[in-house]
Length: 303
Ligand SMILES: [Fe+2]
Image (cartoon, rainbow, N blue to C red; front, top):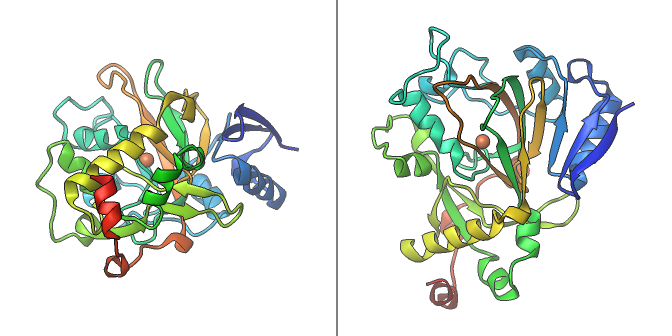
């Protein structure tokens, strides 16, 4: 019988006594229940190959597909799995100028998975194959608490606004400009509400991500400053849970109510291999940007 212990009150929890490779319906129900109140759940001591991980994730919903991502991300995995690794073809850490390593640095910005897609991610499940001795943690910010703790005037300003997301936003910031423009998975831009309501609890969350480029209908500088202000607010230390990886950890998080980022580590000395599967959140599909109108007072208030 699985058991739950809290790591951070009402945000992150650990579940023991559950074998994801042989999960029963009752196990899946236990995790679903745990994810209503908690946005991050850690399952230690798992032994999962790719097929088993995809099967387990698939018990929670339709899996996101990475088949349209550029070859830089496919990395020989099934189309519904994403590999995070600092190793090259020769099994050794890649150098500091390796394009894949530099692109992966985008994960060090606070983000939610696949917010640049029309149908973004719901649950992400990241499995620790080889973990670092030092650094390389994953941090999570509670976006329900971030909303709850906003001042009333900020709540009034932000509610009803929407941001345009793109997979190139964070990477352009890192200096990449040579994206394959013909690949719509890379260049598509989608619009998502900044404030969303979780159907299970009715709680509101801030939906932010480093993939968010600007606020629709607002001058770009004002919108970007507002996004930066909200991100700073959401990621204050008291609102963040840090997961230090152990081999065999399966960490599950709800992208609808968290942001996350990976932490720095010595990629020349250490090996970090993780594998991700994600379910999708059709209930939060992108909206039509043409339907968004921003009152003049909000533009004034945000500037
Ligand atoms: Fe991520």
